[in-house]
Image 1 (tube, one colour):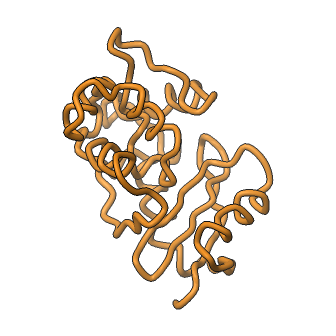
Image 2: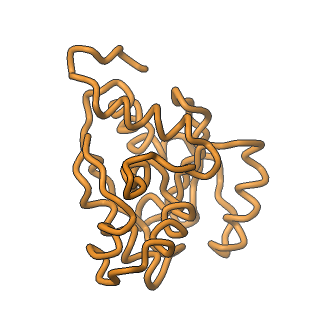
Length: 175
């Protein structure tokens, strides 16, 4: 694969646009509207137009299915970080260290990212993550324990947190 590839994959929280490059997963976005609008913006940022190719995104789609089925706790995917730099990348890499089923506050992630006090910047980084779910921004909560907005979709965040806190025998396959 020399140019980016994409597919749209169903999940329990909505259709997910998966975009991969030769380097790895570059974008995973649970869509709020047409994929074309998101693809257009990504094309400009990637300086390439992704081609639809479900085979190229199959590993990501399969791991997403396993995650939602409750059989995958950690994603084993190469990540292409080209869409994030600086503190945003440091914060999102720190978010990746939050274990499955656990949460950390924005303040804790700021410390993990090497910038104590940068709580709001962590919130901005989480809101802008190009790799939703795989980079588990849903595990970052407010200091008072409330879940926050999650890009204006708190019900998605609640679903993901509930999924990760459910005992393995209580998980429904595919839900």
